[in-house]
View 1 (cartoon, helix red, strand yellow):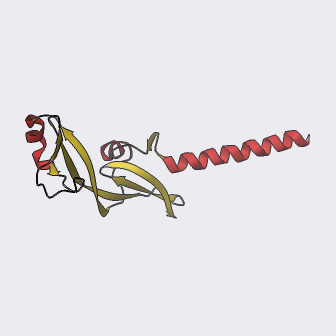
View 2 (tube, helix red, strand yellow):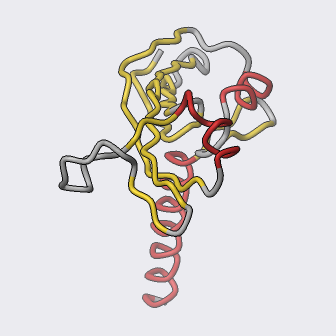
View 3 (cartoon, one colour):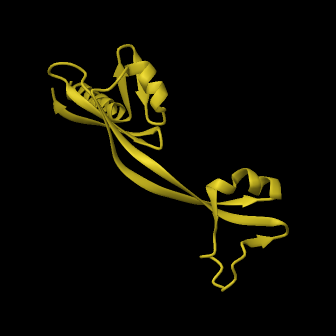
Length: 143
């Protein structure tokens, strides 16, 4: 009898833990579910307009890209700056090897916060987007 009670309590705790984990990774909008990785457009279609939209920060994101031809460079010239920092020389030419040019691409990514009110007595949901993609779902105060 004690083992059966122990297993029942253990299953209840495990189920509660899974529900809490799921709540932090997803949110229900009526019959639809949104989750991390969804875009703003997908969320607007599923949940409608939030009660509040804010841009809370701008984060500079950079990465190195390799261009293998002049056509690649011309197609991307407005999005790239030449990376001299890694060379450690006084040369002003881009790093290259066997016809490849390495450039550093820099993009400003907005960090946005959307707040949804899910109804009286329920917790507000705060969605954080980075560059238009949902990266976090958190519970706010009760409405």
